[in-house]
Length: 364
Image (cartoon, rainbow, N blue to C red):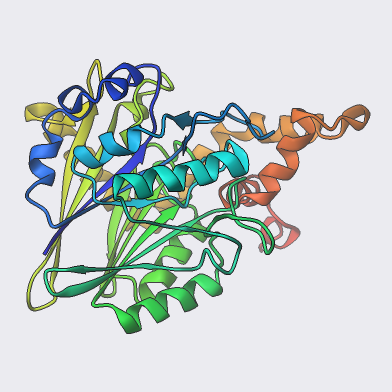
């Protein structure tokens, strides 16, 4: 059994022309030929697929593509979709349900969403080569998450998610977790994120991949499972002029008859119109850099030093969010940034690193 996992797919000004004309080679280069060697391919559609202009009020961008793009994604070789992310609700109820209808019409099964908080907690079970695969897609708490009385995505919970994974493991041969979280542009996981992913493995996950950070991070094997902290983008081209946005990883999982899981990483790089598989020296450099970061992750001092350095680089942003919050009873975007930073786990991870408690600052 062979499964491929792609990272974030979002149409941008660079790729919309090719999406509009359904130009698969321009959008995905050499990737579809590789995907055809697999039995299942999962990717995260990180936008609403809608013609609605009804943006929700939020910090950051509202992302969308046309409903017809679901057909393009399918024709590129994607067979299943994860929707637990922070942008699928960017155009509210209309955009959310337009997205589900577009995927249904394209024949693309999806998971990570529901009519309410309880309904969203549903893995997708897929029969592949005589095995049952459970796909669990959860996201940190950033705008799109379902509420007890509102539709949305499957929000990660440190207790309930572990129950969900254990239940999935009792019904499936293989449990795959797509975790949409971690701080954007951080190559290394926070201490909380590493504990959370390891707990998911202990609960029964065979493979956990963290999306959302928009950069290639680090990889480790833990107990019987494997964890990728930061997959990078799949097809999210040119949105930000940052080196991390120019590459990502396509994950290949091969499950043998005796239950052994082999992991292969295929670096993906951007082109003028989309993405393609990295080749030659570029491919080798990306894999070598990944190996070097993997080694640093296993050295606790080195890993925590890298995490701290990243957080310190973000200090002005977080300090400013406090300074501007609720000034003159402001209720617009500046006032929203501070509670947003408190709502989302990735941001609270940075808070905890930058602003130590009394107990940490008074160690003898």
